[in-house]
Length: 206
Image 1: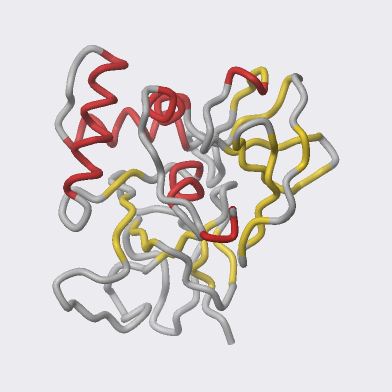
Image 2: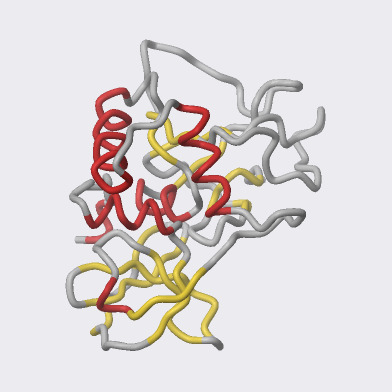
């Protein structure tokens, strides 16, 4: 039975057998039986890590150790509010922060960086994702949106198309048209994408 450790662009943690391209960390979210409690984070440094680094090995959901979370690709992790890890992805971390500095005019330390990002990704006092609205054609490639009020599927903005997400990979793209959409990716992360940060994408994107 699949563990509940896969994160969607909507920030939800679901059970799915796939690992995806990246792992993440928000602290200890599971109990001794590998069951998630009500908390969706225990600290603000939500990182996105490589699956392999210096030969380290982990047993998933070891009691009292951080809960290993997994993402289809980096665009999904960014939409969920994560950022590159400063240890196992140091080059990507520095690239992300350099572009953040270009956008905001200063380069923050890690705590200030995470604090600012947390304010954009989480609703205070609630266990849910903060979202905002934008015109579709104002968004960079790599952003995630909800395409319609009655469609729960997250869509990736990619070129002149919207690409539907599923835990196992992306579906067939549909033509994009200019309209007001609900945006899942935090505003500052959108600005970093717009400034040139290139997320690592899943092969199903084509």
